[in-house]
Image 1 (cartoon, rainbow, N blue to C red):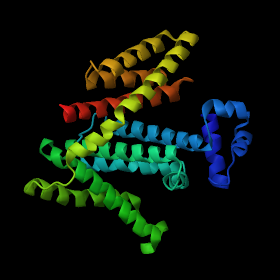
Image 2: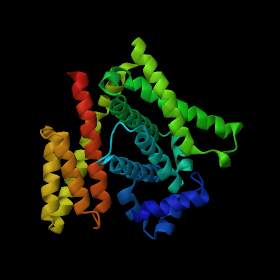
Image 3: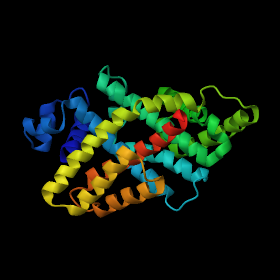
Image 4: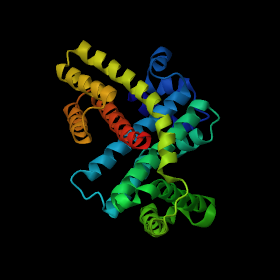
Amino acid sequence: MKVILAAQQVFEEKGIIATSVQDILTAAGISKGTFYNYFTSKNACLLAILEMANDESITRRRKLLLGQDRTDKTLFAQQILTRAHVDRERNLLPIYEAVFFSNDEEMRTFVRKQYLSEITWLSGRLLEVYGPESEPYNADGAVMLVGIMQHILHFVKVGGKEKSSFNYEQLVPFAIRRLDDLMAGMLANDDKLLGKALLEKLAYSDDEDAKEVLLKELRDMLARFEKDGEDKGVEYITFLTDELVTGKCGSTILESVTNSFQEHYSTTAYAQCAEKLANQIQSLHELREKSIDFLG
């Protein structure tokens, strides 16, 4: 956490390209060996910054839904805006641009997975907002919603409107209102282009790789808890690992356990790791449920 925050500050001050690993070492007050214990390169450090922001966005989005009406479009808009708020708070736009335009294969893979993750999340929320009958059209709707917002932002960026006067909080509700018309038209005419199968096939292709990475992180966390004598942590991690492998428990139980896990360690040195693991498990569980529907 300390290294990531120090690196982010240096990136902001010096720019992505001009920042060296040595600059990060100096800012964080650590040795080169310590840095490479955490990251394989400067690019890996960049991705860690974005992953931390993504985890925070996921947590905020889920908290917004607790006890609320999932069909509420105002709430849906607030969830979409959450990512923009986190990005602005952390001044992440220059980092996103560096990653997006990079030729580094690891970075390109990261961009792809982030995009698919966001489209998959949007597609799932559209099902809740527009009802079960919208399911065949939600992948198309999610892609179009992102497209509307991205192209408006691009128009603003190239000079269509003064950036300082542009109200991003108006953009998302506007885009959702346009999506209302598009979804109604697709449902009325049974008109779809992509359909849910393509999105779920693309998302499923990343499922097993993500599962293996997460299992390794869970095993590492289990070893840490065992070393520290954290019996409660061992109990949580054992349950979550079993669930990841077997998929026996339902969404309600899994959500309850992961929330309890986060809360139990929210004020401890394990807080960041617990939050990250809980979010990853929930996301993978949601993807697996979609994949089961697709394959079955």
